[in-house]
Image 1: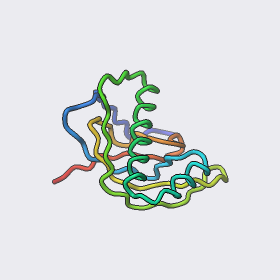
Image 2: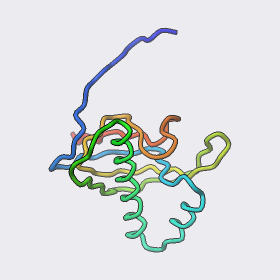
Image 3: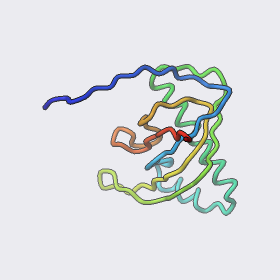
Image 4: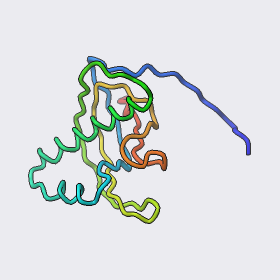
Length: 131
């Protein structure tokens, strides 16, 4: 095995006064089927989005804790587009995954993972750059 290219970059993770736009692919927001069912039972789209935004914020905080970053300002996440929900299988277990767009006041590097099963490629973040 050989490595054809290695691109190392250093990022400063911090909470900013502005927001950044991201897409999030195959995000597993809920680890338990019962949590997904309870979420789906909610009729209000506003309530559902608020739950997802809180989950997303918590997943960013979890990532920060995992890398030793102490967050000292409030993190804001706003879902701007809920594109798709679909089922995925991870080691023969079914999960519900989401594709969405969101804005946050946290700068996240491309291809960082958020949510469940990130070590298997789920929850991939990519910055949306408007041209």
